[in-house]
Length: 140
Image 1 (cartoon, helix red, strand yellow):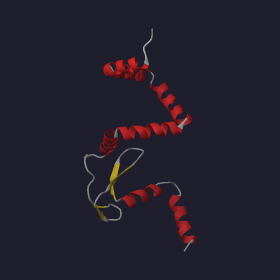
Image 2 (tube, rainbow, N blue to C red; image 1 turned 90 degrees about the vertical axis):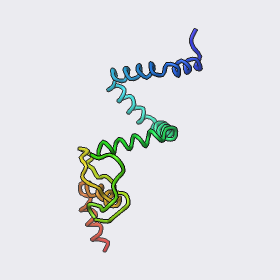
Image 3 (tube, rainbow, N blue to C red; image 1 turned 180 degrees about the vertical axis):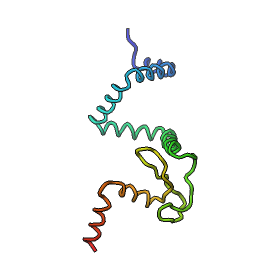
Image 4 (cartoon, rainbow, N blue to C red; image 1 turned 60 degrees about the vertical axis):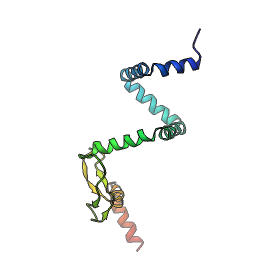
């Protein structure tokens, strides 16, 4: 009658290209529904989702690194290693600079040291700088 799970796994392994093509076609035809289903699944059981992500990262560290590198390369005009040199805010010379970019547009703003890059993320939040100044004034 039906196939055993082992037989199905063997068939899928043997016909991987065909299965991948079918999966891509099904996703393309039902993209919006699939995105909603995946978001709902993540929200319903975040622990399961996080465990699956950890398992994937452990199993495919090279793919994860390549994906992160592609994201940076898409942001940076000249892909490759980050430059060393002086931070564009504090002028401190460091071995590795971070690529600062606008998250809304993806436009590169410049190269910063880690401290300035992290600090800038707070300054960009509305009202944060004023609250920080009030805090410092009240605790001096």
